[in-house]
Length: 362
Image 1 (cartoon, rainbow, N blue to C red):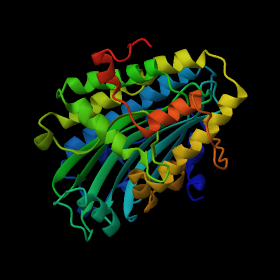
Image 2 (image 1 turned 90 degrees about the horizontal axis):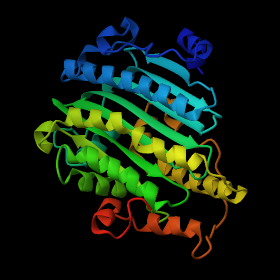
Image 3 (image 1 turned 90 degrees about the vertical axis):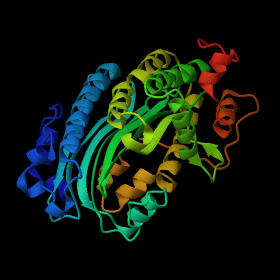
Image 4 (image 1 turned 30 degrees about the vertical axis):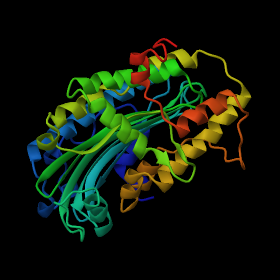
């Protein structure tokens, strides 16, 4: 690829653990990577501050994840830039660890782009009720995001997916993000702990916020062709603006970013210490197939990225190994069937604890 021939790519392969080599802000970028003037952000100070935040967040997550993995492996850092003549000018860093002890494949990416909305992107946004977006396209936009997917080497350790992002267009700034858990076996205590962590973050901003974002997550991560949800959910939000939601959307999004690994770390540590069978590993590979089905068929971010995005950075979220087997049927009452039951009908874990339906330490 063209990327593999750039000096920055070669440097990333030689020195895999250097942090924050990319510009902290659009103003610090090299001239060749600067966006065209007509693609200027709505609020440059806000945008640059968020870019600084996600660069720092990525660096913290990489260091913490390497420590959790315990294998001594380091994230490979693959940096890229696109010139101002590109319709999606910008820069980013794809960081990936493969073959670890806990992390079979882990990716944490930064993407910062400025460009012009295509008609397809504009129609998708305007269909969500955004009257500011011209469905014909052509409006300049700026976007910044940090996203991660951690695929575990252990079938009792759930997959973790999360992101935080800022999108500016048509004089508006909207935040998005979330964090969700995709286990291969149901552990009610883990589900309660994960959802309680996000309930506590949301409650600092609005009493009903967790339930709103939990339901949003359940709606979004649904696989219609399978009639099941991808995982146990978590929180998900999009198009969040402070003047509409009634709280500081920027502060909330940063709190989400800061809580990503802590919501998963204890679960991963506890489950990774347990033995597992080859049958459980094979079930993990089958369930990973559903994960990729959602990404390729339904995920809005993947579809957005495939229109001119960097394919290696987009597909880095794919699991390292997958098994598609014909007409897999779980035995009635089996642990596999218990997982499938809750994927078909999501549960409200926090409410069940509050009502005493389940014990928080179960």
